[in-house]
Amino acid sequence: MKIKDVKAVSRLVIVVVIIAVLLIAGVAAGLFYTSTHPSAAKKDTLIIGTTDSVETTLDPADAYDFFGWEIIESLSAGLVMYQPGTDKIVGDLATSWTTSADGLHWTFDLRHGVHFDNGSEFTANSVKYSFDRNIQINDPDGPYVGIGYSDIIKDITVNSPYEVEFNLKIPFAAFLSLMASQCSCIVDPQYAKMSNASGWSINDVVQYKAGDPRTSNPMGLGPYKLSAWDRTAGKDTEIDLTANSNYWNSSLPATKNIIIKMYADQSALAMAI
Image (cartoon, rainbow, N blue to C red; front, side, top):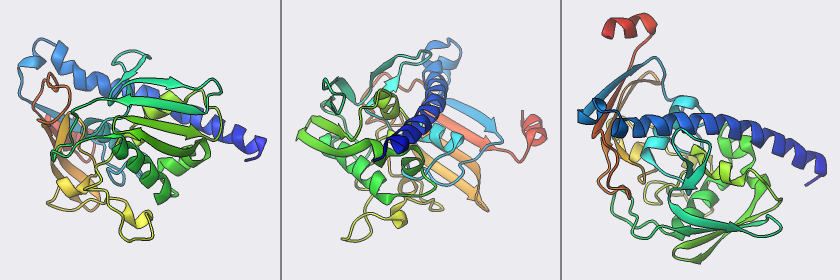
């Protein structure tokens, strides 16, 4: 890669990572809010009204919109995350990590005993599968192309079932911030399959399927499961999230059900309130 290309990619990623930091901090704060607010903690169901909608899909290889990333944050998890309300990066699916002196190799130690919502185990192979898949799908409108993942990541090595290594093409100081972004969330191979033996393509992006919320998203490691997703003419009308009993942190989420209702405009939302 030419020096000017590296600089261009770096500038683009830094801008996107800043946006992701703000987004993650806000979403994470929302997820943990119910565990700290005395009145909210007593509620089993939280109803949210909004005029927003998922723009395209809930596939990290394709979703590149604010609201879509909010839902992805609830349905999946990454190796690391921003501690709610702070700019500090802490472990999520990874418990610890190290980097080489030249900044080209990042090694993550993974949590043991973590399972997807279908009961299958999360391992280093899940991490490699997720990033290899999302990079190779090469969606021109997706974050992996927009941010330039393939310009940063050379390849991923599974060192053991619970250790995975990212080998980079260039030293990238914001790599941990990139890993905390929603587009770096891990997908479940059972619901994110390639369509043919030749490899992944844009056709393998997981699309919305009416009446089938589970196969409408490729995730399963987050605090919530997608229990309902209703759309009309490409616009969301309601999204329901239900606590994931397989979530690795058994103390979360404090609110068992979240119902998100979409309204056509602010006036309709105000009337609903």
